[in-house]
Length: 240
Image (tube, rainbow, N blue to C red; front, side, top):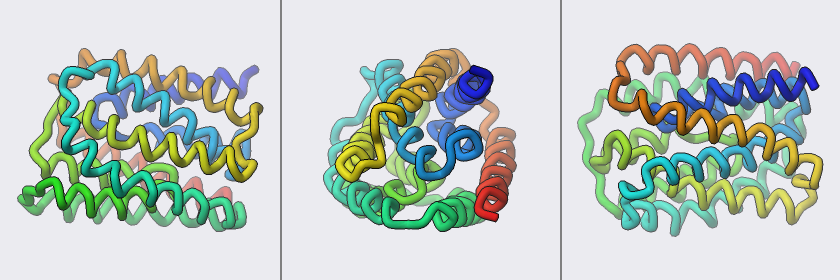
């Protein structure tokens, strides 16, 4: 019981923060799931929870979804996510930890590098980005540090950004969950754990709605850097 209380508490915080900036729930919650359930269960649990988290963001801002951007991103991202998830199933548990740890830590300088470029992108760039990010999402659970700047460069902000990024990611995570179920990594026990974790993320998303317009973006970027580094180091610790 204490395990689930702890997961719910972290999930509520993670859901609130990710509901404000569009990413971060997997980065914060995954190390807890790995510690409590092991990496092979944690990844499909997080996939189910991510589906619920993205659904809640769509529900909170459903009138602001840019469906053209969503379609361009998803048409390549969904099959790429399926391929990435299939790759992940074949990896040994310690390789999963190391891969995710490297990704989280590497994304800190990459995100800052992208933020310094004043790019604008169109639908074709979203399609190309969807293929790359979709495959990465299939392997490392969360690619928010990459997808967030992509949709910002497209010109979305606040509610429109949160809703469109969530709608685009939803298809990737549903596909990933289906692949896990098809190859035996997502059984009923794992599914129920995903529902429990996802319920707290959903609540956090609605709590976050009132804070979106008050966000101090610069302060939070540094907080996210710390969270990603800690999450990455925790993955390395689990691998060892």
